[in-house]
Length: 67
Image 1: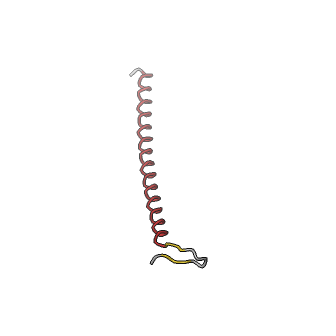
Image 2: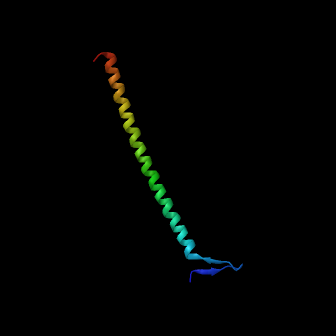
Image 3: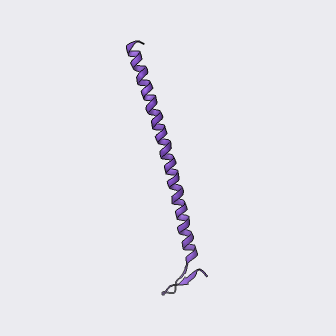
């Protein structure tokens, strides 16, 4: 049996406590994975935006020079 009585007479269900910690660990792990995926996507978006700004700057310079 996974239940134990404390000195104060309170019964503690150890398996439930352990399952709670395991579940919390899974939630944290999933959250970290989601945050990492979001960070990678934002980095890709920033890189794409930087490239578009560079292209726009080059087109502007060509227009100013009359090319």
